[in-house]
Image (cartoon, rainbow, N blue to C red):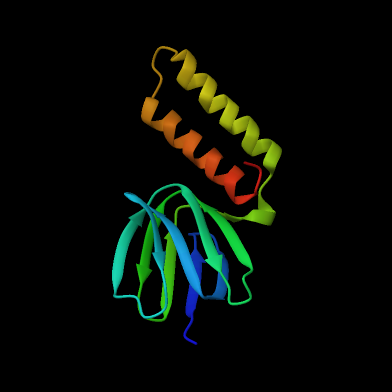
Length: 134
């Protein structure tokens, strides 16, 4: 049966190289799935969780903060701004980041960059989801 070679790469390192049965990624218009023999595609990504499903039904989750996905018939390459495998995530730090972002958005202090606060909240939620904490 066909499979995909998945690579998730940041400017600092290769976060994941794996053989996958499917890949689910956070596109800017919602999550999208890629299976073997997918038509060529390049799309931007938003903060969210990339799920790599393996043949033996195991899943690997990686939190990404945005970037680009390139898919082809047998390969998916994700160039991410930042990415963390689920086991690398500090859940307590991510919870605190989510609470800070929610508080700033709720209180709306003068000079608040709302888009930046919302992006921080999306990143924190993605990290918590990837770690299985929410």
